[in-house]
Image (tube, rainbow, N blue to C red):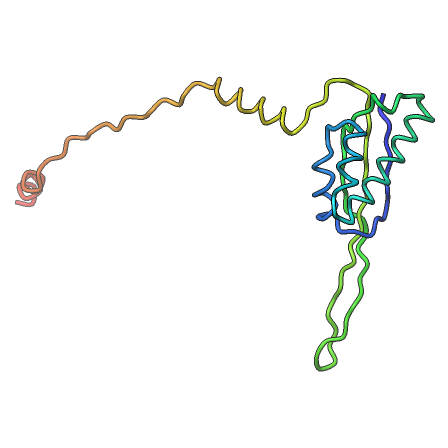
Length: 158
């Protein structure tokens, strides 16, 4: 069973928010909330708010136990960008882009979750199982000395 929560039009750049959501993917919700509580970034508060909303959705709509929930996916998408301008020298104007983002968190109560660490470990195992690439050996071509190669050309010219 999956439960999701979306915080739309969050006033933070998606680039800054993705930094926080990458850290909580695959964690149990209590561990993720603890991590977010001690992360000194604005995005941590916004992601925590979304996570609490997803937990409440799971508890009320699906009668799920909060202790058993795990973050399956935490994604930050780009929202609309507000265009503003700031006065510059000689009467010109410079653009200011106020970026927004959409934070989506999906919780699940499934036990098997693939995290970044398990993906890395699996990748290392598959890399070690691959057979070593065969070395290509260069084949030496026989070359004639310069005077021998020039001799037949001189004979043809006569």
